[in-house]
Length: 146
Image 1 (spheres, rainbow, N blue to C red):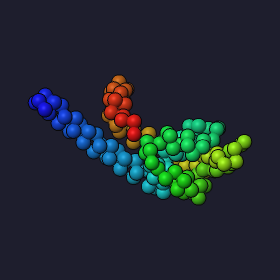
Image 2: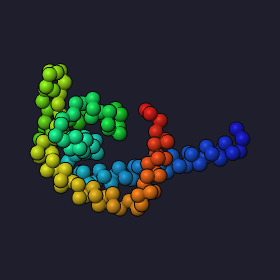
Image 3: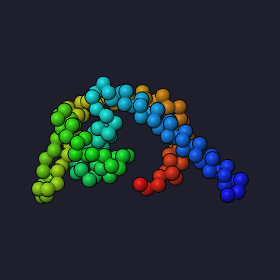
Image 4: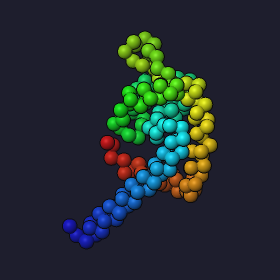
């Protein structure tokens, strides 16, 4: 391997390690916000997806395909949300094997409580719109499709 390739690899390793460190820090900050509501990040992401899809429900496959974590134990996550009264499950009309999952009124209320805290979280990230767009394009470039 020539010196240029070695330098490129080193820079890539340092960048990825730094990205993972920052992602961990951001995740920890979000977890602290959500801890007060006794839910985790994956629960929040599910509620966010369901809220954005209102008034239509989503099936488990649709939820799973949109979550950042590609291997969540979705049944367990939705069970917890249902026990807390944050989501509702019903049989999908016309397909008795498929479940229609929607956010409940209680879940919508909780999301209204969480929203201002998450807005403050995002405001603390010092990126201008163009920088955020550039960062998103770089992250998309790194997406390995796993």
